[in-house]
Image 1 (tube, helix red, strand yellow):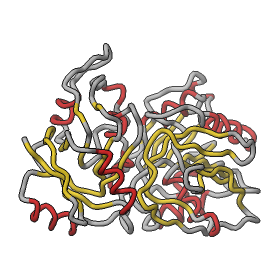
Image 2 (spheres, rainbow, N blue to C red):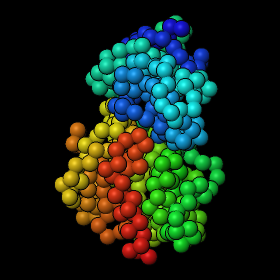
Image 3 (spheres, helix red, strand yellow):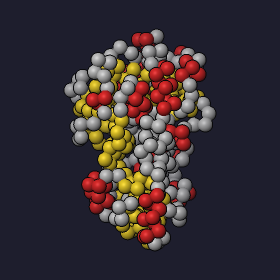
Image 4 (cartoon, rainbow, N blue to C red):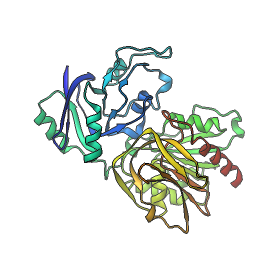
Length: 362
């Protein structure tokens, strides 16, 4: 069936609708990864967003339950150039189109995704609606959608109750215990921590510092997540209560929350970072890492006190701050996703650094 994407500035893209019959609405962003469409769909950091994938064909290797990064997809809609009707992987358990229909994810295909990406790069992130109704009705809805700025989505996607990671380390009970805050955590984070020898207890976003310290963890992990970090004042206060008392490692939203806890400021990027090919320079070693990103907000490096914090990583595309380390406290963070899924593994060492930090402190 014919369908359209209508952006809040009035731009219309016409194509074919697949997936759910219902419409999809949210902030429209683009992701430059060439693989990993299932992992992208199930990344909770995409809550509230419609995702355009820039690779030419999507769905050609099907889906497998092992590739889900959470219990369900969190994207509000999907935009692709071509939705493949052929599945060619021996791992596939379900055709991608059927997967999207089952999860009621609306899809717009057969549009010029290059034109959409250029429009978003020039105009910035746009609220948009995928649907089959008249354009004027869809435009009116797009203009009334909530904006990501000022919205706390971590509470929407977090686990309702604490649980132990299903991925067990080889060392068993002798392994260091990590308490992981779920602001939108991905399963591959839990796999990576287990692969580096950690036991993990996952807790909801609003868990207090006192409750976490009562578990006597060797370290605390602050996960990725969607939305604006500034409304998450509860998390900022919790981090301040944990700083200096236990080693802390944060990524993505966790990085932004650490920066706020240190007195820094965040701002919204024009069109965000979404993809698996961002070059990041490690200031200490001079090495360039190819990294996976999914964030709409960033930290203002000038807002951090240089006497307290070393700025450790920068994005070579736009100079965005991508990492920091506290000079005296056992605390560090990165803006990108070292667990990838999808993406490269250049930053896997950050998990090994966390284990070493916990052992050194212990």
